[in-house]
Amino acid sequence: MPDGVQRLFWAAVATFLIWRGSLYLFDFLGLSLTPVMGRCRKQWEVFGREHYFLNGFFRWDGGWYRAIALRGYSFNPAKASSVAFYPLYPYLCRYLGQVLGSPFVAGLVVSNLATLGAIFYLRRIGRLLWDDEVGKLAVIFCLVFPTSLFLAAFYTEGLFLCLSTAAFFYYLRGQYLCCGVLGFFAMLTRSTGLVLFLSLSLDLGWRLFRRTEKFRVSMLALALIPLGLAVFMLILHYQVGEPLAFAKTLIHWGRQDVWPWVTIANVLRKADWGFPRDAGNVQALLDVGLALAFLAIGIVMALGKQRVALWSFILLGTLLPLSTDVIASTNRYVLSLFPAFFWLAQVCQPRPQLERYCIFGFSFFLCIYSLRFMQCGWAG
Image (cartoon, rainbow, N blue to C red):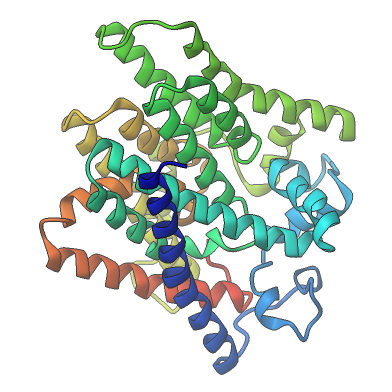
């Protein structure tokens, strides 16, 4: 490892320890000093009821990943099933768990190591496209983003962020085979892998059209990315006998095909503007605000003639979940749209006061969401 890259790696380790360590300390103290906010289900108490801190990382969708890691996939056309969740993360937990003694310990290891990897590659992308200060600030914005708690949870966010940032980095370096392989695994991690493929393909197509890049056979390696979906479908065919089960079960989460603006309009129409004490009402409006903010960032980056891959990843990654008529979890989905943090870093770098406001505002909501999640409340 070259000296410059080695220094960047150890800087990433230090950043992880400081910022994640601070959140873990807050979570531990918060859990110790506050009552339970929601009903904790038995399947979320994976380490036993006495280990309340470690159990705090295994809420909500973590129960589905737990079921896949332990028993593989199941599919019931009449109700929500585990086939909606992609396989790489739970199977990594299963097989690494055979070494570490528990798939749940393995899940925490995978999530945290993947977050460290994402920090490393965010710094490298920042240095490659702008400068090291932009990369450093983008990492901080990512780590204090309100839903960055999911980077450490028994969820796929940390793993997908690591794989997608690494794929982006090698794409930007012209190392298409590395990009395709990493993108393949990103596609096996989350449906957003399709967004990764489309954004990189659009960028490459534009550069070939403008003749700023000459065609190379290695560019075809980007086609490895959607193969991840094909592998997922083969797994489902083998385990449940229905390769499209992942799409058929989504109706039980209330998802249907609509135009993205229909989802936003429905939330605004149904909102209670009297603002009673209703977390669901407020969260839906916050999700709409975040979706609009990320769409605006993508458009501004496009108008500013930044790389097509960057702004198209933001736009497509925001529009895809909006096209399902469900606004829930938008605050978590946009966490993966990391080019937005680079844009924010560029805006804030020459404006230290704005930088402080952003870090404070993000951290404020991060503390609220993190404590809600670990206390069995809904957070995204």
